[in-house]
Length: 70
Ligand SMILES: [Zn+2]
Image 1 (tube, rainbow, N blue to C red):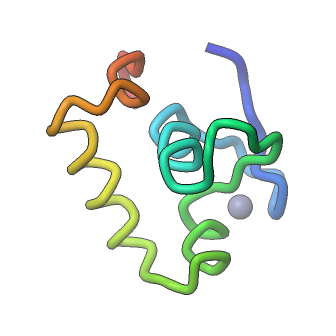
Image 2 (image 1 turned 120 degrees about the vertical axis):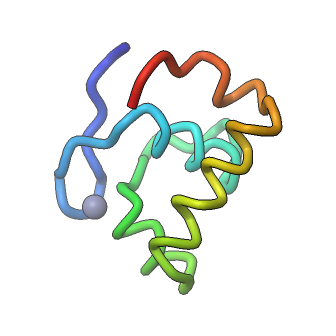
């Protein structure tokens, strides 16, 4: 997996975060945000995003299926 940096804080963005970015913002975005910056961007709770990502993963969303570990 390629390394991706958050477009806001430059922190390394994990595979789960990338998948959630794609899921929530669409497949054509070029910039990814970490959970922290994404939560600010979407005006919601960071923990909520993490739970949401887990939910998508558990429900077998294809975007999350390529993730081997995070
Ligand atoms: Zn960030």
